[in-house]
Length: 299
Image 1 (tube, rainbow, N blue to C red):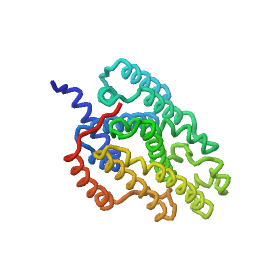
Image 2 (cartoon, helix red, strand yellow):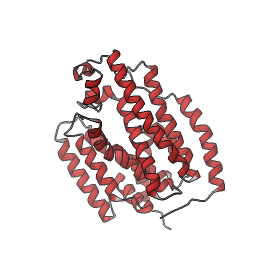
Image 3 (tube, helix red, strand yellow):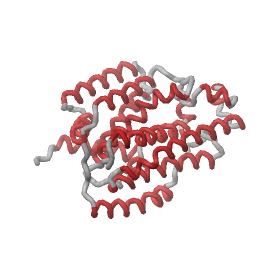
Image 4 (cartoon, helix red, strand yellow):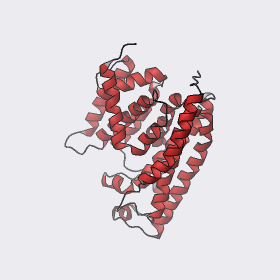
């Protein structure tokens, strides 16, 4: 088969975006067989590109820019052809792995919400947002992870993992999100713990705030527990990738606790040594599984 230089360049653009902005995600992707990694990079790059438009603080109408970009992207995805460096790789990824276009549509709908919505009264409201911003990301990834069971059986675990990753990011980035005018902590939870928006904006880390964060961390860990059994349902060559991502992201919650829940003056991060300690054994197992087993593609 002839190699398309433009497509190769597009996937490389996506890989660089992933390596630069998503270190944990990128490290976990290295545990997948090489032929699957470009798809991961393409899906990550799409999410990153949307984020950059939504968070763009340059003068002008962000909503208009986002709508113009997303309409063009969806038209190209439906047509099966794109000249955009990221879009070209996404078109190819959706075709190769039979990823439903509706998952991209749902993702874009949630990203657009960030342009108009800054508060979430209840956790149910936040879950509606997270369907498109997180759950569908897990479902986008599922085909290339090759579950050994029907998709309907594996999907709830993928949804839970996407939500757990998203909530982890929300808790780590409370301060950063506030600076963009957004609060992803449900207002019902703020009220139940005696925390106010003005207190958040002032960066107050007191007893009520710590109890609020501990409550949110418990909720997030419950999602990780719901997601974890799904790893064994995946093809062996995919398990270490997902397991490593789960363990590293879950570690962020530990780092928040170690900082005494101060998410205003610093960003909780997993140390490079810990990332390598977790990923190293997984890489060895992944290579062993890769050598022994062939991919399984189920309809």
